[in-house]
Image (spheres, rainbow, N blue to C red):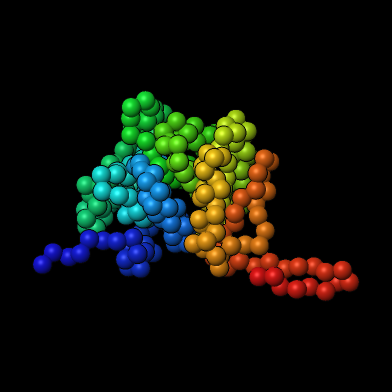
Length: 257
């Protein structure tokens, strides 16, 4: 009797923490819920990740796909050693996912959208996770690549936002949104700790309300009582442990969350 296929929930319980990487389990659950909403609404497409590394977040995305959809694993696969790509291949094979993932060994900053199936008549991407080299100029190029490859309902997830290690990444995001006003951040996924940093979820403006409302229902007990303020819009904030305090006239303080 062959073993049951690996599911997202079982991967998160049994494997996620053992795979090298820093993306939080909370963020993985939020992103999988976003992809589930896409499936429920008939919004298909592939998934992609820049900075696939050992596959921790990539595998979570791959397990949220529908039959016939692909996960694209983009990386130079040269850090911390030249065998990282081999370890990823072995891990995918061991989990029964080798046929679902296309490994692309390339510098994402030099990739054309056509390489990922983008362009007229190509395969569109519905979820794109960007976890590159954390330099502002690289993030700008990676976002431009993602913008060119996305399905109309596509979601772009930006890693290590608001990280104390990479404080200038937010500048690149603000500039990209100013240059592409049809896109908006609809959700900020707060950090689990200083290493498992926050993520921004972006989509086209016309889909932002649908995504935000769906995630607010799905994670009702994780909705922070304030919203994130961007130049042209506000966004939902989800936190593993939301906490908010109200400061009253006279100096009294009440916990809101």
